[in-house]
Image (cartoon, rainbow, N blue to C red; front, side):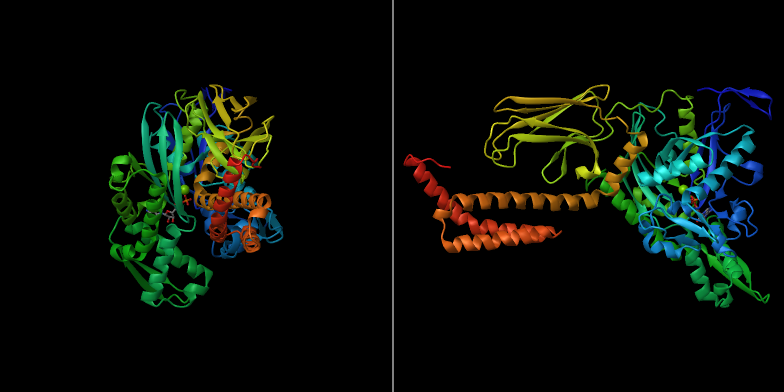
Length: 630
Ligand code: ADP
Ligand code: MG
């Protein structure tokens, strides 16, 4: 693994090749590394241009190579068709995923195939978001190589905690296109925590909130870190809320207050001037109380605009409130506290990430909500890249003490009626471990039972990963619900899962060995966890619907069975009424609403209960008279 490189600047051998950490942001990107001597993470600031590289790619009209960063940013309004920003929003997305947002971009997004991944059109050429992200990564790589005077071939890249598999894969591919071997994709909040030194000591246990307000996106994550394992308890946020909205609020305010000439809204150069002045005001007010500047229109006419911090706070107040609402939801989803408990006692730290957390009102609102001063001791622009650099350093083998995994990262369970996952070994269980449950059959006379084993956090098996299945056969024919089948999971220290099913009445048994980790990368595991958090609400609704469906199907089975067997004891009216109501349930089952199903079921149940009881009594009498019950 270790390669030898010569540092041309110092003429010394470098023992290990440097692996960089990259924050590939929606608005800004950065590259960082851990200094081999000081062991400190540092953001790379090549040629004094600052460490921040705006995530903007401009294709010059003369067909020359694309330019990236501040240079490209200049063209945002003057040459919007050839200047691509916020490409991270498009990564790994299909045109359908984008929906109405596609038309809000300044450049052209192509609808080549609604299922396929989006492409961006610049004149007669098409670019994928992966290629454009690769352009940004190439620029970062070049800056790193230039500053470190050594080749950079390997990297760790961060992504938002909520990124799905396709978005993560796209990020990886962008790295590869930029000539980088991507050793790991790391969640941004995890990187932020690492930068703050949280999670580096395997013996500590911490719960932290990471509040990340960037240029165009906001997200908050609650993490639990123990034994080097970063568990995302919840995430929340708004992918269309950020510092750009603050700028827009300022522009709107000035427009309304100072009667700016119409040209400031139609002429790209003047629009740009106005927008940049608004951003400048915002940044200035992070440190001062009053801002004044002059805007000059095409005719050389000056308009003085001013803004105080109090005015600015009033403008952005509602936006900041929205972030706090998301924080409240994240805290609730993480189930950190009961009503009477103080949030501050359950959270070890609140970490601020993203340029927009420099706004004092944001700092105050976040600190107030979490009941403790938020931690902003690291540069919020750099913190994610710094954490990525630390992760890179760990992967380079320079910190051998961190990141162990001795728990099962995902829940293991089996499929039950209606395609639901019934968890048997919950995620984060220490291994080796053993757990089991009892099941039964759902149909009369069922002699085979399929045991399908799944791994994942979603309620529906179809959204989890199937590990294997087997059939327990030879169950003696019995009425539904009578057989007792014990399903046991044994997970050994090597991560090998043994599944065993035994029908207790007949002692029929079946056993298989399953390797749960096979083919699952760390990222896939993270992904499945993330999906379960992001989709928790939908899953609950889907589960409730499936449960209602399953219950309705069971009821239909029982009722039709019952009427078939007991026709002679029922009146004609009872039979027709039952048939009609059975039809009602069937109709409800064709829909996707839970309530009509439940209602139709209740009605059927109510209708049939009295005569079911009556028939039961008849059966009992017949049984007492020595007759056989079916
Ligand atoms: P992203 O993670 O989305 O790429 P960043 O974390 O780099 O974005 O945040 C960029 C945003 O931070 C921009 O809206 C920028 O105006 C804002 N920002 C940067 N510095 C300051 C500051 N001093 N005060 C207020 N906002 C700032
Ligand atoms: Mg960011």
